[in-house]
Image (tube, rainbow, N blue to C red; front, side, top):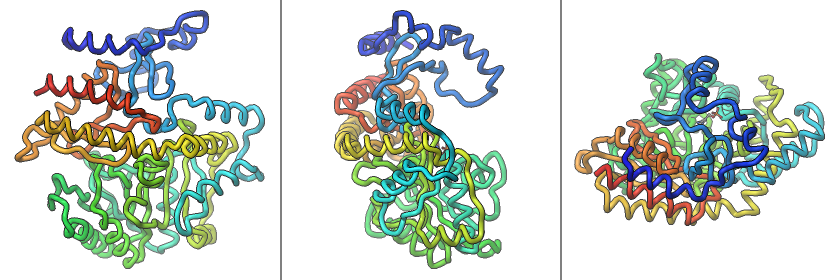
Length: 458
Ligand code: PMP
């Protein structure tokens, strides 16, 4: 890191509220360890689980769009979509603590909060999507959705995107093709090329792009038929996060859904990333494509960090599933989780966060496109609302991915006090996915710092 980086990072630290006073030691890492010692203890006791950044960040507090490390340094959070309403929103904190002080059980007793949330949630969804099943994570939601699809269709197979990620249970691990390098692809899963009009096998957007990528489904259906599995479900993340954040051609999903349904399968929209207003124009990512799935799964931002997730489907499919299968989840839908989820939904609606995602996201995307004219490293800027991907290439002519530079951008931005991620099939897409309360000022801070970091890389 150069001196210049230091001065940039330090000068933007002025927003940090450095904690002092009697309670500070307790908040700042419980007053026990410095980062190096904590790291050593973590390696011994937590194992080799992943940590971001070459020098990991030791976050101890969050507020709004900012995270604060143990030394009080502020980071503008452009990465964490779980807290879409902002870190430690007082309304969520109060809802959780009030309900925890009153009662916490499970869904086998009548409880107003569960029913009220299910009613409010399904009001935001189109068509017959009116029955909710509550779980604790995106993985569990997708696992249950796949089981439902198998029962409802009588088939066994699944079609997913190349480089997909849908979770970590053994069933859903099989549907997460990004991990296939670690082991064999199950024969009940077929993968299809994502509709990437920037670098896929059909580039550029015209009326043939959607149908071109949708026909890829035909070979996947044939593959599952030959293997004797048939198609139980097509599962797709509506914002294509692990494929590098894609905007599919408008008619892509319509064409895909038609083919899946003709083959007897169900269409599952994985809204774990795209849901709850993130894409700006729509509450749910699939709505950007004028389709209605048979099953919707959701999680991440649903409880602002409280582990709550859901599967929503039609009464007909839910009834078919309950006739043939048993499902119970001890923690899913407990009153504390539902209080958190009810508070989050109220904040999204009352603070008009979907509209904010649309306007601030639109502004940010426009300015990132301006930056792409200045910095040849930026090959493409895409995404919707406040879920944007900046694809870095070492040459615009042959679109050579630039993963090393993407990693450097994330590292340097961290030093400058901005947290970002990296995604995509080649690890060359800078992922911008801040809380939905992100303001234009926040966007300007991100843009100014990104401009400086990219300048140094050129
Ligand atoms: N689906 C998608 C699209 C995801 O991005 C993730 C998590 N990154 C999951 C499902 C799994 O969610 P969880 O980690 O809550 O199990």
